[in-house]
Image 1 (cartoon, helix red, strand yellow):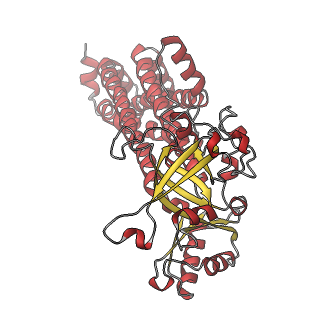
Image 2: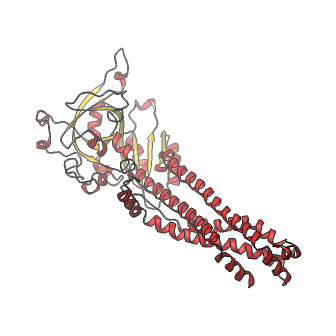
Image 3: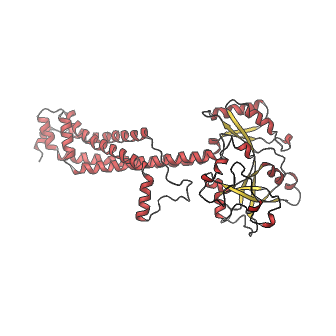
Length: 451
């Protein structure tokens, strides 16, 4: 019992104990807050990336016997026959160069405009996309910051546009195909619904042979915009109707990708492997990947950033624990006479060492618990704190134009946070064993003679 009493008395009587406790609390708070924010970033990034694709993507292999016309029905039938698949839709994909109709051309190689005049054109069937992808959701007026001049008239008919809305009167009766343009491109180029774009691409077959390289150009009218929240995807992607895509490019391909929606709770890696086996058995060359496979590098980069920041701040927490070591070393030096008295009264060496070890446990434990509470509180109120700092000091902490989020995302992992506190306390006790052993091994006679 004397161990707890003396440890508490020694700790409360020394102001340096509160300093050590505060340092550990701040370090633990910082670590918990950073990990919570990075977990939030990773979770939101997964959600946004997941929204730009489907559960599984099937890529047809190139078979010369098809003459670039993949048998779409055979692929769709095989995929749709899997018990875990709930929907399939086909897309055509082609890179293109784009310019605003009626404006001066932009140079393809100019780094300033290279992200504005190069796009990936996706040919889609809106009715087939509805049950498979989230495209209709990203065209919804409510999903886009209020600007009715750029949104589609009806998300269920994304390529519908009243001729009266076409900005260029000369193009109103030309029967031009429609195009959906990402919100970032619309805003950067000052476009609105009804404006026209010219897109240029390379045709297949004879367009790539001979002495001259021939291109195909088509003017499209913007029927509206979409916003997935993934800035680079929205900036570099446009959608057109699949039939119009084939007319424009002259392609013989029936599809470039199959987007597959699986049932809720489906094991995507298992479904992927089973589809690969099914394609192999049917002798249909195809590549199959989940949405995580497709974006593994991007997601891995975010996860690596989280792990690196967590590791660096963990070292900071361990560094603050050494304050406890210094505090106990000084305490043992100051309490030499007390140690001698305790030994003379019959206290064991282990009991004396436990007194100082408990001091270290008190400081680290209380500091860790305080840091746990402050860290979780700060993580849950991080956006309110951010707004206060920005309005009070005029410092921009979070730039909404850089990230795809309107506010700082957080995801609090309570078991991990408790593990951080336990690990901090364990490490503090470990490094406090040296001064505690020094106190336990002290010669009582020499201790009593100490002045």
